[in-house]
Length: 203
Ligand code: ZN
Image (cartoon, rainbow, N blue to C red):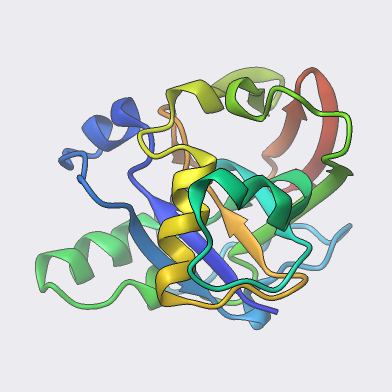
């Protein structure tokens, strides 16, 4: 199983980090060792003083595919979910400044928090799904897939030109604006269309 992540897919978020909105999707990956155990708290790693949450809509792949055409892209998604792309922002800024790869900042152990999924059957509004992240009961991120720079079908078509999609792979589709740091004791809660999808504590 692999995790493919999309960067800068919401214009307001790209702007808040001082990045340009890319014409082509920005892609990076996380290994399976990045997946955080459900029910465990997120433990802030010792190598960073600035871990950020990035709440994102997740797509689970239900069918093998390569060079998928946009018009058939939805057939390859079996479930949708919500998760957090935990990012060591200080490490990422250093790597970006040196034009080095981002893995140490984005793909470390525990950096992929994967919440609940639900089957896509019956969901007709994948292009306008609302999701929210609450930190200590304040709403910090509020996204809508309608505001993606690159739509879900476009992402699947683009990604599958480079990386074959396999059953069980997960795509993190990018985060809306409002990213910020976590501190020990924080509690993060994710909601998709008003439904609770995860709850995670930070230690
Ligand atoms: Zn992200």
